[in-house]
Image (cartoon, rainbow, N blue to C red; front, side, top):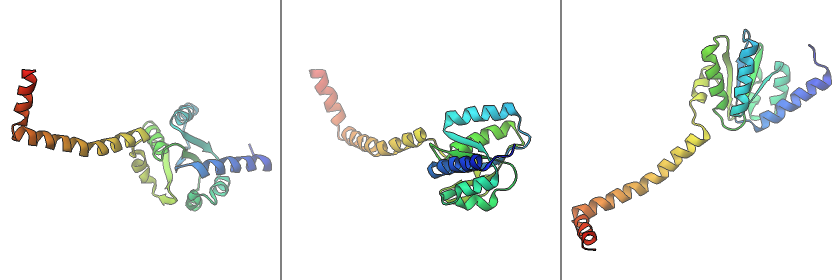
Length: 174
């Protein structure tokens, strides 16, 4: 069904707003994907903070103009599904990679992160990025390690000097 001018303007405005806030973009060829598969993908996308949209490439090109995804305009050819990661950069990559395992017709065509156009094979790299919770856990582990090393060193020195035995005798006497 053809869109009239006001509908096209709404699509461009919606995509432009999403592109301005998104962390990454993965454009995927979806021809041959069933309705059930697309419905399941949309449901999973909502849960993981990914905005999915099927739009004409000319409308998508106009929408990304002036955003960090401006670099993808020339690569948008054929019927594409646009996946914008809204909460974390790797979310769209994980979603596409997960659904591509069960659907060989789903193929990444364009990947863009931080204003860079990357080859489609980089969807695996994007998918391997840690989630926000994983990154915070890694940071906490890195920050806690020096304190743990210091405590182990102090204990080793105390044990070497016999401080561990003295402490044990003091608690036995009390």
